[in-house]
Amino acid sequence: MSWTLKAEGLAKGFTLHLQGSIEIPVLRDAALEVSPGECVALSGPSGAGKSTLMRLLQGNYGADSGCILLRRPDGSVADLAGASPREVIALRRDTIGHVSQFLRVIPRVPAVEIVAEPLVARGISREEARARASALLHRLNLPERLHALPPATFSGGEQQRVNLARGFVADFPLMLLDEPTASLDAANRDVVIALIGEAKARGAALVGIFHDAEVRDRVADRVLEVAPLREAA
Amino acid sequence: MSDGPILSARDVSIAFGAVRAVDGVSLDLWPGEVLAVVGESGSGKSTLLRLLAGEARPDAGTVLYRDPSGATLDVHGMGEPARRRLARTEWGFVHQDPRDGLRLAVSAGGNVGERLMASGARHYGDIRTEAARWLERVEIPAARIDDAPRLFSGGMRQRLQIARTLVTRPRLVFMDEPTGGLDVSVQARLLDMIRALVADLGIAVILVTHDIAAARLLAHRLVVMRHGRVVEEGLTDRVLDDPRHPYTQLLVSSVLAA
Image (cartoon, rainbow over all chains, first blue to last red; front, top):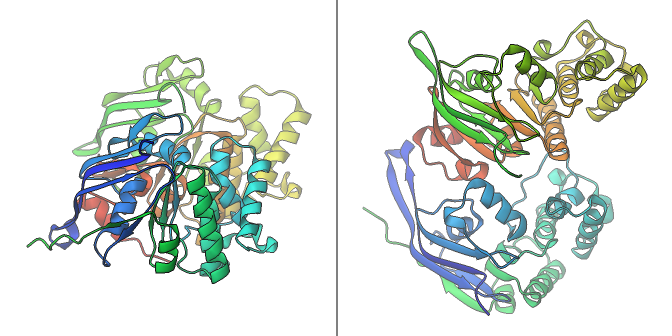
């Protein structure tokens, strides 16, 4: 079957204007192709550009050159690298799911609403979205009494499970996972491994950074080495 | 989000003496979209907002508004009566200082009901019921409906201004530093309220703010202004996390992480 994500010739660097306009090249000619049902693990030393590549794939960073082709649920293809802000927002609604290490907490919004939001954004009724969100939070062993609370005061592991539920609650064709098990105990780690397995089974393409070698070995079909660029003079 | 922009500005400029307060600004706002205009004091962002809302006339450039029927109206060419009619029906304006958007001697319920009446509502009972519903929505106790806002705290006044503005379900709302001058704890509550209301009602908003965190929370897109010009614009999280322009980098790096 054809790819879900196909990135080619990606380059990304940063110009730090406040530090004497120093140029920091991070990625050059990076390429990545992921098929439906496939999970690719990004590997490489710290600072090699794994997180930068993930941010490019999410549209959070803008690529200096190259293309990031994504196949939408309707089969059409979009180039995230050249997409307008409104197109990026639409792609994040229906195509790109994302689990980051850290939850950006919104004041006063309960955990269950944060998790339900991607479903509501797609037009699913609030009741159904909440029910699905709550079920997934239960599966990730987040106690019922926490569902109605804003996660600001949650522990790191609890916040991460809210984040995971938010990422997995909707069926995105592409899932980006940045250290999805970093602060989880063994039981919840197994739940995440199962969720990844189910996402693959339904045909999602996944790209992840997994520092936990055991998790990586269990979920990844392939490892892509991201090599550091040599420092520019 | 459909069809075309609800508001389009092209090459809008205004000078005050030798100062080019707004200098060739173009932007589009789409239905249901929240666009934040950020920049420091004196960047021209509040002046731009007044030009977009038709409250001041630019020296050059055009501002077009697309009404619900799809017709395109020239904000500065439609005449003052037509603009005022828009301002009290399809548009709303939230001022930084609630005293500019409220009548302090009129009851809270009257402030909300007055705008309903200005847009055509006539039945007293319906108006009072709707006003009470909106006070509840902005978390003002129903028991305060007959109190005048001069007795309210700053945060409550600002919430009342939000209720007064949104009660007619405008399609387009201009907000000028809506959280400026409020305590931080009060700001968070107000921001969350604006976020929820705007999303529920599908309102298009132009939000002028110097508060980067507020812009991140509320806005789909961001415009960065400096010296009257747009120096950078784009997807909110990309502009803030991957800023290109030296001034945007300065702005983002100057924010203290809590």
